[in-house]
Length: 466
Ligand code: FAD
Ligand code: NAI
Image (tube, rainbow, N blue to C red; front, side, top):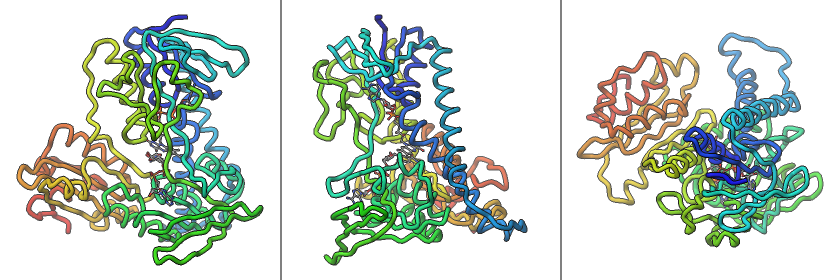
């Protein structure tokens, strides 16, 4: 078989790109080594983690805030197997939806491991046995990423686990030790802390989510601390050992002492690595860089111009919506269109409660780059809508250019921050000033008023409700 374009990997990047390619009239194939489509995001990432975040939040609210709302419940219990089953039902429905979309768009779907034979030929070692070889005028590497680990913390998938196992535990841990207080640590740590686990974060850096604006990490730590979690910042893990029913984590403290934490599970969430294992890149004349990434130019072309790459396997943020934009970009580039991705304006969200959402420059980046800026913040506790729902933790922070007033960064920790950030993305795509936002009517009472109030604060300190 010969195709206009073959996508290797059916994650958000691969399947979105394949659909766009088919819409544009390209004869399209997609290869996926797992039995279901959707990649990390749909199977063991975005979707299942959000399903468990929602379930655990319901439980936490029922246990801790319902009484204040005037709702009484007796003998509340966690049924973890049911919670995990519901999560899996959501995943199954969603991945089946992608299989339907492939059929609807007449995309040939191959289930098996794809590997290069040469720069135009891909061999598929099929999951149901046998081999097939297909050819592509264009080929897209969309093979994603896998959890990273270090030799001192060997993953055994029983006691020392990654996010994949943490999404299907059979019991709520008594003590969950999490190495890495980044996005996965914050989200899955929240899930199990809400369900009653003691959670300890051991983090190399000096705060949670250290790559985001520092204010966000500080505020998020306060919120997660309320769930009863412990934090070991600036600590270095030296050894993780499975002791049967327990796991022992040896740690160097900042003042060079050694301590040991004992728990029943240790979640290693220290980042993810680009994944090209088994792809036989060399046969296509390609090789991954020292960090395992496939190098691409600004058109997402590798050094072999008809072979493209996208998503987690290339540079940039490891986010589903970034991979999706790149899939669309590649399909449109192949047919000669001139698409565009504004990487600085790809939003970043942490689905804890309160949620954290950001777009654009952090304050630290502005300082580092010497860009003159002003800032305005507004706390959710001053917002009627937040008081009505008892979601008063957090704030919205706006960074605008000191002279032009153009919005350069928006950082929100608070209720529905994940949805509010969309307004900031639109504003920044159109290069709005903070003043522009202050002149636009925001429905009252809504959480979005926090963004407007932060813009008022950034332009002459004129927030109304503070
Ligand atoms: P992937 O989704 O990793 O897909 C790659 C696919 O390629 C896989 O299905 C793999 O099996 C297949 N493959 C690999 N090699 C081959 C081969 N040789 N032949 C055939 N198939 C192959 N991002 C967000 O934006 N929002 C979130 O809320 C979010 N939550 C997350 C939660 C967790 C726990 C994790 C782990 C990740 C989360 N992410 C989230 C990140 C997101 O999942 C990834 O950024 C996204 O899936 C990357 O998409 P991709 O298409 O590049 O690769
Ligand atoms: P991460 O990069 O977000 O966090 C890793 C953390 O581990 C960092 O804080 C880092 O300082 C720390 N760390 C690294 N080595 C360490 C060590 N030896 N000891 C202690 N701490 C150490 O990576 P994470 O959480 O594993 O997630 C991987 C990727 O998945 C993220 O980069 C993100 O792109 C994606 N993701 C996105 C989500 C979302 O969009 N909501 C949710 C979950 C994952």
